[in-house]
Length: 235
Image 1 (spheres, rainbow, N blue to C red):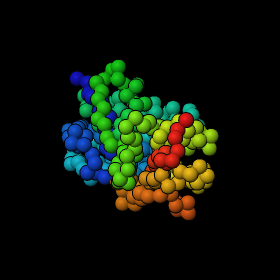
Image 2: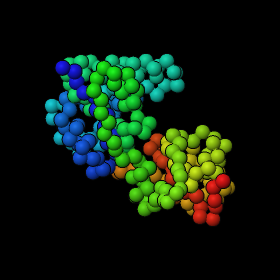
Image 3: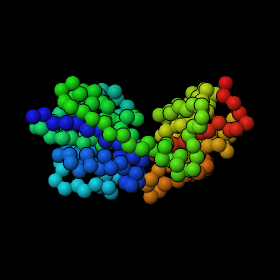
Image 4: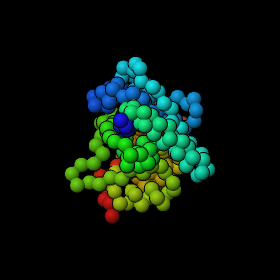
């Protein structure tokens, strides 16, 4: 009997924001697959899981997804991750692979699913994305009525951000921490500072929700929600 692969979004950081379905699936799994960037790395997603789930006899399986700039190294790590998960599935185990936020938004789970879905049963359980949780914490909407929005996985350059601001009512920029000063200058020049919210470490003890502070350092888990100022209209 072959096992089943379940991708589970565990939300942005607060264990209380995990869904009941996610908790139940993790507690019923034989194996919890935990994506990490390198061997021995502490997983934020697994820390969330431990805060909401009863972990008893499940096997904890770290699966490495290298963030190396070398493409071949990234490809090789994905192959090894797939092989490790496949080995468990071939033994008839139910594998719960966890991911921060929602399982369908920039999730490493999709690499594994695409390789194994023809041979094994798969399922996806959604979670709350950080930008949705952050908007709620900031007491703002992302979009209303007929408004549109776009999610950018990271900031690349001023031209990319400028085009997005011209085309959408709300622009969400993820992983913005390292480029915060550059983004700050652009938003200040264009008049967006007053309508921009910073969501840093959402749901974690070091959470910051507020306006951009250019002198403050922001980490990897930093998202910007940039709303169109009421006086402006998109093209």
